[in-house]
Every structure is written in C-alpha cells, then in structure tokens.
Image (cartoon, rainbow, N blue to C red):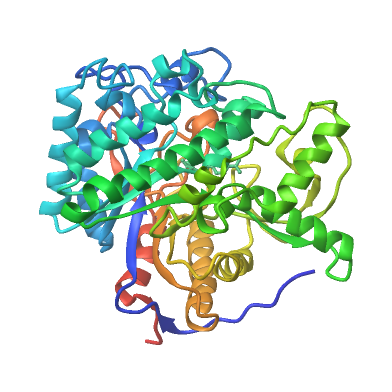
Length: 478
Ligand code: PNW
C-alpha cells in the first residue's frame, strides 16, 4: 500500500508566496478587553468539561499585546505574508453594526495592520475563523437564515475599515470543520449535537454568505481596493484501500465529493452540490426516515451566484486516509458514517500528538492534483499545513520532517504536475489554544511558554528548517 517517494531539487518560482498562519481566538487573548463582545468560543471554553485541560483562550499567547513580537518572528523566518483572522465580536460586540461598532477593536486592528505593513509584510485576513459573536448564536447561529446577512454586513465593515491595507481576503476557514464539529458532533463551539441535519443547514448558509460577500467585494470594493477574495477549505486525501477494488474506488471518490466537494463544487465547480453527494444525502435520509433530504437545495439564482465566487482556492491539509465503504449508522454518528466510508490508516504513518493527524505527504500531492483537474486549475494557496507534538518540545524533529516532506510533494505538484500553486502558509507561527484540546497539542514553529506571564516565544528547530526552505524558495543543492 505504501507509495514511493523521491527527493527532488528545485524552486517554487519567483511569484510564490511564503507565510505563516494564526487565528484570533487561538492567539489574541484579551477576551473581554477594550469593549470586545463574547464569542461562542469564550462561552464554550468557560463551560466545564468542554476543553480537555480545562483551559481557555482568555489570555492565550497574549498576541493582543504582543503582536509586535509575532511580527518580528515572521521577519526572522523570512516569510513575506502573515495570515491572521479578525475577531467578529471584537469589531461588533453585538454581532451587528446597529448593535454598535467597537471603535477600540477597529483601532487595534488598524494598529496591528500598520505594523504588519511597516515591517514589509503582506496581511492575509480571514474574516471567520470560528469565533462567532455569542449574541448571534443565541439567535440560532449558522443554522438561522439571518446569519447570511449578518455575515455580509460584518464583511462590509471589514472591507470598509481595512480594505485600504488588506488586499488578500479569506471569507471562511474550514467550513466543514466548524459546521460538523460545532453543530454535528458538538466537540467544538457551540457544542450542538445533530449530525444529520444542522451541519448541512449551517453549511448552506455559509455558502450563501460566502457568495454574497464575493459579490459585495466585486460590486463595491474591488475597483478601489484591487484585492483578491477566496475561501479556505480543508480536506483529507481519500485513497482507495484496495487500489484494485471498484467498490473502494467509489468509496474514496464519494469521500472526496462529500468532504471537499460539499463546499468546493458550489464555489469552484458548477455552482451546486456534487451529484454524488445529493444522491447519498437522499438515500441516507430515506434510510433514516428523514423527510426528503437533509441536504438543502440552492435556487437557480443562488447556483449562478455561487459559481466562480473565489479568486483563489485556499487549502488546509493535514492528513490522509485509506477508504472503503461503510453501512454502519450506530452511535456515535460520525461524518464518515454519514458519507458512507470507513477510514483506515497505515501503521507506518508518523502519528502526531493529535489523534487524527498522521503524516502522509504524498496525499497532499494527490489532493492538489485532484483540485487542479476537478475545478479547472484554480490558483491554490496552501493556507495551513503543519504537525502537532507535545508541549515543551524545542528540538521538534518530527515537525521538521513533516514540513520538508510535504513541501517536497508540493514542489513535485508544481514543477512536474503543473498545479497552479501560488503560496504556502505553515500552521502555525506560534503555539496556541488548540480548540477542544486546549494547550495539550502544539503546532507552533515557535514555542510559547504559557506558564510565563510574558508568554515568552522561543524558536523551535522547525523555525530554522522552515526558514531555510523559504530563503531558498525550495530545495537547492549546496
Ligand atoms: C484546523 N480534524 O483545524 C484549524 O484551521 C486550526 O485553527 C487548527 O488549529 C489546526 O487545523 C490544527 O488542528 C482542524 O479533527 C481541526 O480533523 C480539527 C481537524 C482538522 C483541522
């Protein structure tokens, strides 16, 4: 089952962008400072039993106060781009502009952005990396229709307030994760458990909000601001368990269609959900006595609006699986069971500290090739890729191997397969609050001491290794 891999030399091309990524709730802290409203992650992390180590993001890496240091770290590793996210409730504590614009929140981000550009870096802004204003969750959150306009209005404010500086926009980070874990299995905020219905209702609203935000930028901002707008989707690569089995091949394809295609097909494909996903949703609905289909339908007008609503494809990749079919609906109902696949891994794959993360570099090459050929060769930015280990490791050899091996596969995809790869952002610049597992799993190429009130940052070995690849813009013989 194992795939062969060879080492190649070469570079990514002159226009390739290098960066590192973070997200507001995971690093900022200052959860109730300077007029910030509460987010669903504040609520969730403050609820006993939700976070493995009982921690929260109240202070996190304290980047609200230490962003200048973070910017210096980016300069130290030699990248040109910083992917960060805006906290919606820091800008709109009550979710909407009618509820009041938080001047101090806007000032904070303008100060931060000024420092980013004064240091010669390019800001890449994610509008939504999961910290929904709690007040909007109280009205139904992503399940409610109203969220679509609330999001578009929030996006308008960000375009208006920051569009002179920010030219690179990502509407959403990983909709499959926040809809499924947040509204399906309930391990992420807001902690709702409804695997067969809510994630797809929520996802429907996310796609509508994304498409309308893209239209908004085109109609009102693009001419003056000249930026680009896209979305970040995540996917595992699904490889048939038995490459000679047609059944396994169909299962792997169904996995790709239902996981990546769920959001990618409407935005980068024909504007609608993948045919295979619609068929699967109808048959699961019938099997479980759900009237019609749990997968909502787009109107012809919405399909037109969805189609082509991104200037680039943001991809987060961490891991892969071998796949066969599955007809099991026993509790707990997982995303895989809904899709109808059983996932397997190879014991030889290096295991991260996160139970779901196994290092499969060749899966990334296959995944970007699949996107290239299924969605008309879009510009692809890897907006996240990284590896987790235990707290306190500075000589992070496993992460160094992971990054090198994945960048090797990307170089092959770019130079040998002709994939339009435009950039790469490592996850993450610094250790941070890793959602429901708190500070137990670390992704940073810089260590953060969470015991230290100063939240001291220290370079790990991977910061040096990554910076070497960045400096060479690839892999050189020397
Ligand atoms: C991404 N999974 O989340 C997020 O964009 C980051 O905020 C996060 O810190 C990073 O990856 C590492 O986890 C994921 O369960 C969360 O498969 C969960 C999964 C995948 C990605």
